[in-house]
Each structure stands twice: as C-alpha cells, then as structure tokens.
Length: 136
Image 1 (cartoon, one colour):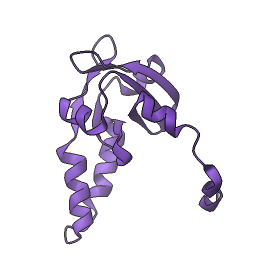
Image 2 (cartoon, rainbow, N blue to C red):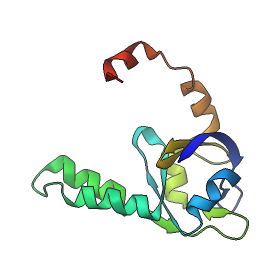
Image 3 (cartoon, rainbow, N blue to C red):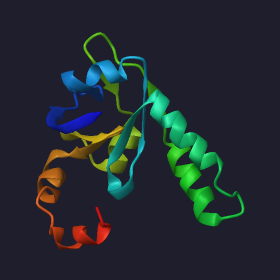
C-alpha cells in the first residue's frame, strides 16, 4: 500500500528517485504514464496489468474508450528502478505533467501520482464540502 506524500527532484537526466518506503513494492518494475488532471501515474507492473485488463474490456466501438486506451498505453513507459531507486521519466511525460525539478510523489494505495510540487501544494487543502456525496 502506497501512503503519504514526499517531495523529490527530477535530475537533469530525467531521473526520479523513488521514495525509500515505496522502493520494495516497485523493485521488480514500474509503469509510468499520463494521469488524470495532468499528473503522472506510477504503477507497480502487476497493478498496471490489472488496469490494462480492465481497459481491454472497454468497447472499441465507444469513442471515449478508444481515446482512454490511446492515452494510457501510448504514453506508458515501463521502467525498472536502478540500484539507487531511480527511474527515468521520459521527456514527453515530464512535458505533459509540467514536472521539471521539484515534484510531489503521492501514495494512493495501489498506485502513485507525481505532481509538480507547487501544483500539489495548491491542491492539498481543497474545498472538501462535496466529499460527503461520496457516501463513504
């Protein structure tokens, strides 16, 4: 389970050091891709495979389903962390999310989101008046 938020940097070569507490769960491989709301999604390979199976079940005849499939798979990059726990975030993904140096790495149970640190700080205290509608 991925929990918490961590600020890290992306170096000049596009490498992100994964927070130490997340490394064991990502050591065998990751998939980074476009996220929703212009962040990046980082999945353990096994979790991405579960998502891929669900995406495969979407009807090809539905335009939104085809576009979602394109966005998730065409942008996806499989990475294996190096000995220092770093992965490369391809330039096209960094450009998409606007991440260039300081990032927030956010644990969200089964996956991780990567945000420009400043953007995340502005999202941290949302107006939560609508959360009660979730029924949790």
